[in-house]
Every structure is written in C-alpha cells, then in structure tokens.
Image (cartoon, rainbow, N blue to C red; front, top):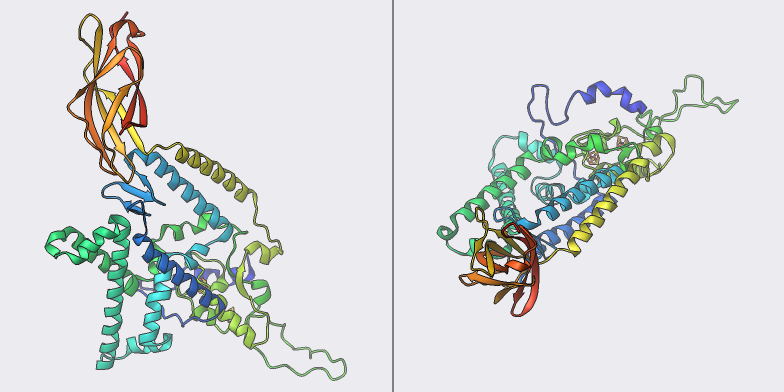
Length: 480
Ligand code: SF4
Ligand code: SF4
C-alpha cells in the first residue's frame, strides 16, 4: 500500500464523491479537459462513432454485417448467420469474449472504458462537449445551475436539453438498427406510425432511456450500474496498466515554496528548512477535471474510468512548474512501487493458454459448420409398419434449416443406404433465407437389409441437383 493510500484511507474509502452525507446526489462539474490524450481520444471517438453509425448500413450478400435480433433469435456476426441451432457456437463465442475481456483487463486495466466504451464516448465526447459549448466550463455551469430562472437560463437549458433529446433519438435509432436491421428502422421512421406502433414505442422508450442516462444519470452508470466496472476489484492486479498517480515521485505533496535562505558559510539550507516536497504541487487540477469526481492520488479506484483527463491536467501543471511530465500516467502499481514492469505474469499466461484453446475450438467449429442443417427424427409414438412381405416402413419428421442469405429451392431427399426407398408425405417446400421448413416422409427398407431392431441409415439433401447436406438416423424394424 502506498503512503498516500494509508494517509486518507478512512476519508476516501468511506464516501462516494457523487453522494453526500444524507445520500443525495452530488452533481459533478468536471473542468473541460484538454491536452495530448484528450485530443487523441477525440479522434478515436470520431472514428468509433463513425463505425457505430455506419456499420448497420453495411451489407454482405444482402444481409446486415451484424445483427443481434434477440426477439427473433437471429444473429449475424461478420456476415455469418447464427440461428437457434448455432446457440452452442454463440455461447462459446460469448465465453471466449468474456475471457478476452478478463485477460485484457488484467493486462491493460480499464483501457476499454476510457477509449472504446460507448457510454464514455457519448458522455465525454458528445453530450459533455455540447454542454461546454452552451453552458461554458465547470464554474459557469455551476453558476448557471445555482442562479434563479431567467429567460437566458431558460433558453440555454431548453436548447441543451432539446439537442440532448435529438441526439438520444438518433442513438436509439442506431441501437435499434443493430437489433432489427436498418431496413426495418427506415420503415418505422418513414411509414405512418399506425403501421409500426410497437417499433415506434420501442424507439420512444430507448430515446427516453438514452436521454435520461446522458442528461442526468451520467457517471452513475459507470460507478453503480456497469457490471464491468464492478468487476474491476477482482480483475485488476498490481501489474495491470492503469491511470495511476506516481506517489513515490509526488509525495509529500505541497504548494511550491519560496526558497529559504541558505547558510552563507556552508551553502546548506538553514536548520529549520522543512523536508523537501515531492512533485505534486497540490493544485487539485486532476480532481477538478475528473468526470467521476475522484482524487486519483488516493490510488486506483472503482470509479476511475481511465479517461486520461487527469493525466492531461497534471502534465500541463508539470510543464508550468518545470517538472517532468507523467506524474499521473499509464503505469502499473508494481512498477511505481518496485520499479518492476512485468506484463506476462503467471495469471496472464494461464488466461492466455485457455483463451488460445477456446479460440482454436471456436475456429474448428466455425470451419465445420454447415449453412444447411437437416434433421430426420422418427415420428414420436410410432414404431414400424409392415408394408408387405418385402418392405418395412418408418415415418420420419424432417426439418431443413436454411442459414444462408438466399432461399433453398427444389429440395430433394435421397436415401443413400442400400435396399430402401423414400415416400414423401406431401411436397417439399422451398426454404426461405434464414428460416426452417418441416415435413414428413416414409423410409421403406427391405427386410433382409435390416441389421436387427435398429439399423443406421443415411439420407442426402439436394437442391437443384446439388448435394447440400446429409443426415444419419435410425430405422426401427422387427426383432430378427
Ligand atoms: S481519475 Fe483520472 S482517469 Fe480516472 S476517471 Fe478521473 S480523470 Fe479520468
Ligand atoms: S494535477 Fe498533478 S500536481 Fe496537481 S494535484 Fe494533481 S497530481 Fe498534484
């Protein structure tokens, strides 16, 4: 534990910067950040926002590149369609993703929160920028909120919230386009409301939700709601790279003192000269810019979203006082305390091994995954029927699942196993893209070709004469 952690432990551990003694909300007015990291994050944010908005418009073979249609249980990742039959692949992909998140966090801390998380990007790079533009920097915002209602205040607040709500509507539309697809969103937007009441209500609810989050709830999402944030306590290790204050260099902190007189004979400081101070000049700028209201000098805290605002602020101060930049920087606790920078710890190597194994399994399952899935199941409750002296028949229910983005037409089943024939019940329908067709058929087998009570048989599925799938099942016959 660092010196600074032990100093103010009681005070900072027992309170939350955004909650007062009576449990009320303390509104955070972070000072407008500026600097190298903020500029870089702004560029990264614009690129990510462009991708977020642009991706729903991208199509592959007529389908969206990504779709997460929970309602209809249709998922598309990089143009690959996942149906309910692929749930094992999807579940494995989720486990792999979870493990990747764990591994990434162990090594790079909350880099994701500061640079990639949509909540941080929208809050800090969109809504907060608009707020600074309309209401000014932190002090002006505080003054405006405490001032009585005047026409100027009314105008500013109305303008800000109107823009906020419009952006929230836009975000809701983007969000919905990942769930139901951009084409359907376009229809909801352009058709009369009566034609899509459900979709319209969903849009309104999401818009209100996003507006509420970005206009009022804000940093509370990261502090109190986000499960990833809550997991930091178990994910971070001493070697994780986080935004951290170098307490060895910074402490003891204190305002810059004027130089005391030196002993004229020895040129040494006079006896009552206080101990030399660290590099932190206790200007509190790192606290003032923090969007979650914390003091990073207390050490790594759950509330820190690694937004880098305090790094920029402190660097600016260090330049002004002529000291080396990086008093608050990306670094690990271990490196500051011990001077040891070690990324590949035993834990990281262990996680990496499991991650590689999972990715390999995933790759194998993907490469062997068929775009058409056919099932033949004997009709429940039926055993076998004796057709005549030569043939025994079984009734099967079949199911053809089409995961392709085009229909399957002119389907034909063929029995591969020797000594049998098929009799269809009705006609086999075409299977539309990403849908399923069900039906029934009889398999009739010659008695002398049966192996006993259970005989394995194989069927093939053709579309326009081309083999698209095959399936194995069991034929039931009389005991020999
Ligand atoms: S402590 Fe620094 S990096 Fe963490 S949230 Fe506050 S300003 Fe951002
Ligand atoms: S900005 Fe830097 S110098 Fe100022 S209080 Fe924070 S850590 Fe100390």
